[in-house]
Image (cartoon, rainbow, N blue to C red; front, side, top):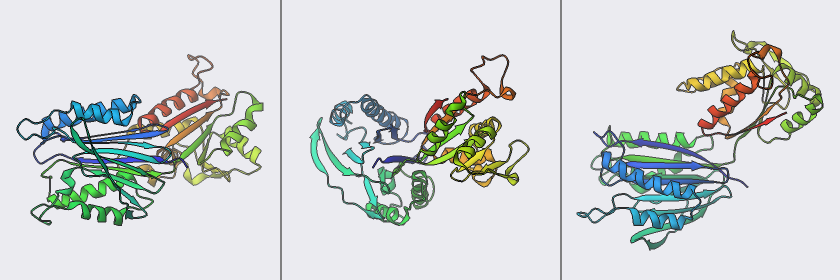
Length: 383
């Protein structure tokens, strides 16, 4: 079973500092993810530079396909050491997560990774050894949908020190909080935000140390397939409908002609919901087996505008018109496949453009790029 990794991150600067001394980089690819977490010595600009150097070196090497052991050795040998305190200028946790569910982390001078499964923390045994003159801990474990992985900096464990907690919030309190608050509908970003709020309350304001909270939620990938426009060749109608209906996950149909093609091949009626129409967006429809049926280019163009506005608070979840509902479905998906029929609609054709480059095609390509910038995997297929 393939595992998808959703990532959330919250950071807070130490009181009075303009930069966070911690650095975190998460990279997601179709078959794997990498997570690099570093805490620079001290705080402020110097700590930020040192931790950023650590994460950048490790991330670039991992992205280049180098083995984890070689990356750890290079980072360990590269890190400078404070001549006065005789300690490294930055810590690191370097992890690789495969889509098959295997995970490996090498940790130097950071809190260990926390794995929670079924609201219960799992014991992770460490293999300790020396690499590049530094004592590191290596963790190998499996991940499956429903698991939560949490990495924190010392600033989280030290929260409340000398106040609510004499020695700080501590590891056991962190574990108990995560066990009691994770649930299926909570996002990785939501869990990171919950922890950040607790830490801020314990510090009674801006923290006395840099705070970083990285959360990975393992789950199944959420897929969405979107069909817009009829194909150029009428004999391809059956192929595009079959491609839509055989796809896993949610299904969206955009365009009146396209909806009629789908309804005809499925032998199902189209019901129009007039209450969902607005001045700028035509009403949606309903076809059994399809999650959303909308008008075509106008609705998709409006959806693109909403994505570009990037308004806080997810206002699209409160609206029922086709464009906002489309945005909601696109944002919930991890991977989006767009099947584009290239039959020309004269109403949407710019006479100054080549006939094979319609407004519909332009909008879809711009939408795809906007979604990729949001971290979505997007594939476009033309008929």
